Amino acid sequence: MRNSKMDITQEEYAEAGPEKEQKTQAADRPPKAGRTSSIIHQTAVRKQRRRRFIQKAIFSVFRLSAVINALALFIIIYFMVKNGIGAISWEFLSEAPRDSMTKGGILPCIVGTILLGVGAILVAMPIGVASAIYLNEYARPGKVLRTIRLGINNLAGVPSVVFGLFGLAFFVIYLDMGVSILAGALTLGAMSLPVVIGSTEEAFKAVPDTYREASLGLGATKWQTIYRVVLPTALPGVLTGGILGLSRAAGETAPIMFTAAVFFTPDLPESIFSEIMALPYHIYVLATAGTEIEATRPLQYGTALVLITLVLGMNLIAIIWRARLRKRLKG
Amino acid sequence: MSDSKSNGVKMTSKHLDFYYGNFQALHDVSLEFKKQQVTALIGPSGCGKSTYLRCLNRMNDLIPIARVEGKIMLEDEDIYDPSLDVVMLRRRVGMVFQKPNPFPKSVYENVAYGLRVNGIRDKGLIEQRVTESIQRAALWDEVKDRLQESALGLSGGQQQRLCIARALAVEPEVVLMDEPASALDPIATQKIEDLIHELKKEYTIIIVTHSMQQAARVSDITAFFYIGKLIEVGDTDTLFTRPRLKQTEDYITGRFG
Image 1 (spheres, each protein chain N blue to C red):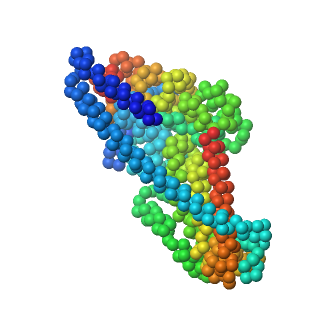
Image 2: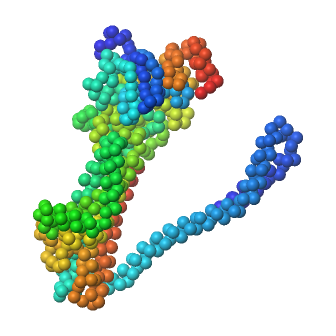
Image 3: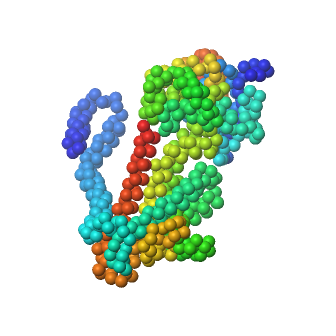
């Protein structure tokens, strides 16, 4: 890289040098143009070191930011694995807690978290994708659209505990669902909606208009165009939205502590109206309200490790699926 | 078809004005397009030729601030009549775009798409139409072994011929082409032009082009547009050798544009 840069500079020098001597040959060229280019050339050479220094400095800052990011994740995971790996055993993964949750496993929590995450996505994806289609493909730009957008953006900023209270008031009490998987999934779904809508809209915007035109030009209706061309093309991006929503939903504590999760229930859920245990809430309970907080530290780390692995695992499945779809589209 | 009274005229525009919001992009354009003829629309960038082309299958409907005045007739139907189904219109008046825009689907599905959206379910019929259309677009030998592969893997020229095949599959009566070869190399351009010669036996073709040589090579009739107005229209040979107006002459001799 550096060599080629030097080459160019030397070439430029070589070109600039003889130019002055060959003045007689270049007589028919306007003299002004020659002088301007040599001033530009000289300035460029003079400032070259400074410019290269600035570029290096700036990219170093950017590189550092990226490294800090990766490092933070690495430290968290390292800490978690170091402290939690000892607690992981087949018993831990396959049994219910025993002896006031100081022994035994966390199976009900794992099942609960998976059910809540999947449930939340089942709620958020259809509504989110339908909203995004309406906003991006059908709605005419104007006041109404701006108001809806504002609403969605603000929804994204609402703290999760407020969603929890909303779920408690609306789903659990008003709609009489009780503390249940259904109420929790609906609450988490509502919370992930803005994420799903946002990324789905981005995915739709990335579909070139030429696809829409080509489809309409063949006598397809607007809906056929969306269903058969836009949606399949945008699907990898839509899935990204799903992944983000799922990750957020699975790790949340506040929205489920009022709506779905309970302190302790050793049985696996029987229906969507059952109350359940969930990993994030279990960590919270063990770490703050358990009978023997210090003694259960390894269990807390172990549970956290399982939660992170679970979320990463769910993401991984979705990412593989997305990569396959992309490959099929690109051919 | 009942064209006794229209003596071979497929499409007509009468006093067509077109507005983007307050800006008038087309002024009083009246033109006739005959069956089995190629009409070329030429003119400098921004002269309204593409806008005009997109009025002919109401593609401009997609722009919220666009507005049309005047009439465009497809045989004896007014295509801007509110009772007319624009989806049906676009099946009858097909379009090939400037940049090749195959869907990210297989070669086969690209051509079958128009048939499927128009409600054709018969697999045998679809297969037959797909094969015929690709053959007619002079692409069959190149893609017959890769019908199930993604269309995005084809070269630019092949993609554009695939787009033509896709347009032909739904049996349009008129084919609009918006600078169909401007993104292609000379060899691919040659193939598209040969194809246009073949296709005009069956279709009414209207082509927008930046290249005057191309207009001279492929068209029977040439219409010259300048700043939203139709300046001159006539036999391609006559227009290029003995234009009536000074403006036309200036443009075709390369003095501006």
